[in-house]
Image (cartoon, rainbow, N blue to C red; front, side, top):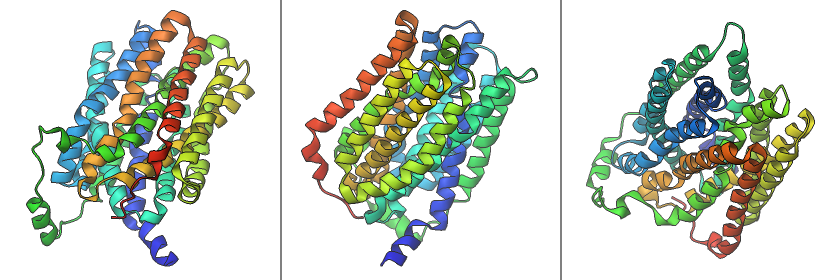
Length: 399
């Protein structure tokens, strides 16, 4: 039995899916810490930088329910491939040094991001053994976050290099997206005729009905993931600006530590959630995130900054892997596209809302206050988890 489950998890499809996710997230990893610098270099404020970051996430939120519906009615592997190709092409407008054009390019990237994530998570849910969902989610999320080990460091180095700047950063991002599109294309398999007939015969509600676009079973997991991600723009989007203000150099190492922690923590503690339960594991993640944020706002040297990164990254890693597993547990197997769209909308929604809040607070009250607010937003998730702990033992779909 163990051999069969191991074979089912570490399949060719799973490995290729992880490669696609790595390249897609690497595409975004070079842009997240550098776009705020780019916007401020063009004369924008911290709040303007937050708005630009938010355009990426707002567009992803708005189209994601539709992408989920199309994933179920069409093919999740094709949605995945189109999404990652779209990332590679959508970044090219950012070569034009205009804040308005950068925002438009981010809108296109946000739509493509919805395809990458909805298609990817749906494929993951369909190929993962139900007894190893925490482990699979941990590995999957760890691969996504492992792009932070080196790519933000390279991007920040290029921005400050004498012959660098944003042009090479944008081109690297485009190349990573297109490579991911190629890997995604290799995942597309000819559909078995019987399955195609079965899929077309499956009756689905009309696209303009709420029940067509939302899976209520995963709303709790989605809400927890939303709270988990509200603080991320303050950490990853504005950290370079904060470090410059307080005089700490070598900030690229923070992102490297984040990537390493995700690789180490997500698979191990994701697997642990299969054994001890989703609730305690998610609670531990929220608490570690809060501690990391509080230490970050008090950091006065490089060592304290890195320690805050270890705590924050560990917390985010374990809670993200477990909320993903919880979403798969509670999703309808016949509507996995809609379910994963309902769940994953929390990520761009959290980033978009978090970017607006972080930018506004940083502009009016400073970066330290911004991190206090970020810790408070994370605490809301911990409170919500406590209120809904009885729901964490709800039905688990094994299909």
